Amino acid sequence: MLRSVADASIGSILAWGFAPFGGGTLQFTNARGLQAFIARTRELAEVHGARFAPATLLLGMAERGERFGAGC
Image 1: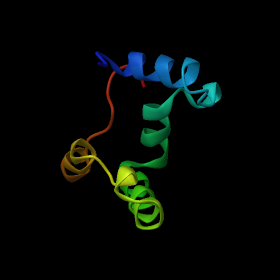
Image 2: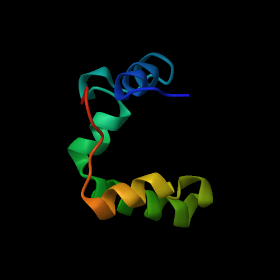
Image 3: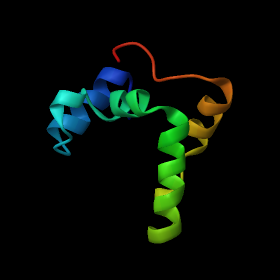
Image 4: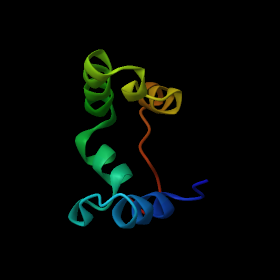
């Protein structure tokens, strides 16, 4: 379970090998823009299946104009 944006950042860099210069997965999502990120996940879901579909959390955040918070 993640407790913070920092947890997600460190985990994505150290555990998955995500590019460290980008700051982690959530910072990447913020930088790209949530709407663009969701659009890309939908494209991937069409080709590779539902596991790439955007999470309900992301859809709600996009509707409210939110970003991933502190530590980004």
